[in-house]
Length: 125
Image (cartoon, rainbow, N blue to C red; front, side, top):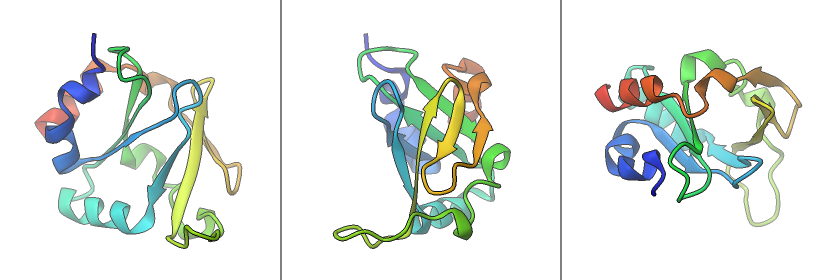
């Protein structure tokens, strides 16, 4: 079987911020410039989509941006590092909590794991 996000990848990427997280911890990065671009293009009806295993159909999160927007603010950006100077947020999802690496701030996103309703909403927007 194939991950449900990969089955709809092009349609989702056209409108939402989609990244592959590391399976297990869902470690990922969102870049400030790309997030801003996606927000402007979506009238703020953006979903943040993180998928893990490419072969597990339900290994993904579809998170409405509005529900976690308080995390993705300039003061929570990672410090620039050699080879990666782009402003970005890195985070992981464990135990249903999306936790930023830079500040430790977190949000409960357990309800968005493998949530088919959220996936359908994202595909319709």
